[in-house]
Image 1: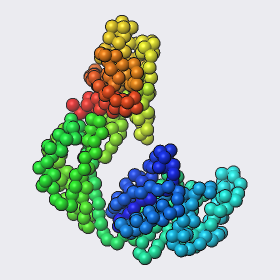
Image 2 (image 1 turned 120 degrees about the horizontal axis):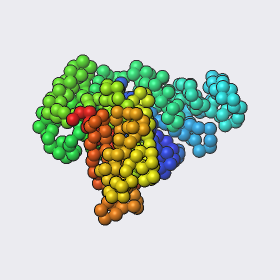
Image 3 (image 1 turned 90 degrees about the horizontal axis):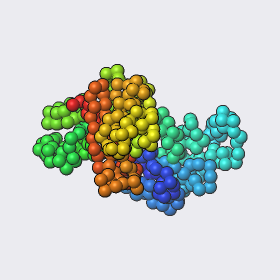
Image 4 (image 1 turned 60 degrees about the vertical axis):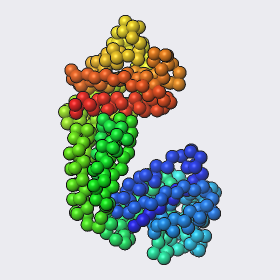
Length: 413
């Protein structure tokens, strides 16, 4: 089954809203052996939407559409679909009753805009929206499928999980199997790793592909196997994974598709240790990334955002003499920040960051992008000087990544 995703909305094309729907949908579709060949974004314009539908069906047999189903005048997807499939809008008592019930539970009154959402194309199969007011519309024509869903991520995800994916699974025209394995590799630049694995790639079976997904300090290697027999496909993939592990050894940080913060949490939970952070230039971003992982309270206690020297000195116990002699962005200071936050929070582990994020504040000796990082676990502490020399947002993101990588190195080296 080949799929194209079409997202509709001017807000996506002017950068006001970021399309997170497509990535989530592609991942879920891949899990059932459906391959996304194309992702298209168009404005709320009838002619552009119809052109996108026509082009999509020259490539795929399933089109999934999100957006343009709200109650306002700029939401024209429903009427456009009527024109495209040669049908008309009809009033659905079932949808209306669902809307009444939903609005009543929210303490809202039905108005004309809401009532208009009970108008649906006559030729479609209506799927009720359990968490929103816009109904989902499923069209079938000449062996092809088009499904129109709301653009609100929570509404799209709910109906995809509960209805769309199960229905698509039953429509699969073959027994295609797609299996992935991802590992995280450190200590390599992408180009160097590619050269190192050149012979491995040349000798891989044709139905297995290797992809490089680099981030600062880490490369995600994804092996993808395709076949028709699930057990055989998995067995072939496992064989290639073993070869890869043999080549890379302890350069493989993790043999699962986990984020760096998930890896940190995994190591901490295995040892029963607690973590705290002391942050200056990252402004709490390390703590933010850690606490985005559900269950992080099991291993993370808290953070001190020591943006000023006063906080470094009075809260974390950094030596005033060292701040004067070496400056806030220095090896001695981040070491003391690590020790101080461990004492303050009563944790075995900590990371500390102090740097110059920019765009100003740099000096000839310490230009913008200069960051000192320290990581501590028990009696073991390591420091690292980084020179990012990038924009403020990138410097903060890269300092966060580098701090977490330095912490992980204490567990694996």
